Image (cartoon, rainbow, N blue to C red; front, top):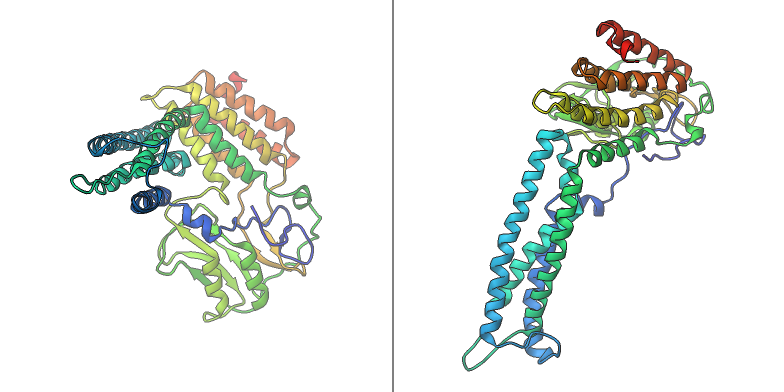
Length: 430
């Protein structure tokens, strides 16, 4: 997580905690993010190589030692075999990828599919397999017999080397797939990403009182409701620094009515701008600082990581799967995340400008909200299990002993609520 000047006076800051701006993504990184870009680029490079190499073979290189030295028939036979074999294996790789995605969706949660598609191992494997097929076909058309014999030796050799590379990548692909669908690997990957989000910020930023008491009072004048307009979707990012800077320039206060991860439909409110007119530029600036998308993303939304883990535990506890040990493994990772959140104060809702004046009122995720999300549903679906209540009680007992006083009180309230709701089962488990 990054922001301009987090934790320093005279700049945009949150009174407790880091500002929490989204990570900046350059055009280069954004270009390579879609799944199809890397395989398509590798295939395009193969097309270029298959166009250039035969020309170099014929006009420049001539006979080169240690490369393919067969005749026209053997070259055609080899390239034909490579092309037919590679297209078959490419179909196999596609099939394996789709099966793994289906297994991950049904066994864990559909919200994990993005991480599988983002794997560079899968993208490179598909790209090299497809490029081997395309390269072999294009070189095959340059081979000529008869009076003018043309056998592109280097090109045929490159096709053979692509096959060897494909074999190595196939082994790497199988290893990656078998590792990526193991439940321990899945929940550890999700928990590690969520822990990075929860642990963002320096000790100075999280220290209460270092930024001074916020100067905060209602802004005189009208209040404008900023809506999604014609847009709709999930709130994927909020650029807090941009909101504070725009609010300071216009002398207004922005009160957010949503948080990252929530869904907003057409015409639904996003924020209130106190002290602005309906035609002020700050209204458009506020709307532009709140990004909508089709699905949730983790960088500003730790609840999304917890949600994925809870979904995995719920599926494990369903009668169709009946795997309480996986649910306990998820609770171990949730315990890890809750300890991070319990050791720090809740992030302040006040974002201030360089003069210490509150310009944005946020709705940050607090420890109590994370605790409810992490525990309630698993406790409900696992109430009749032998392992789950005992593990939940152990998690809560540890949190109560190490958490900050205000969080420890929240944990004790949760323990009492679970005991009352489930007839004392959690108390007996402890």
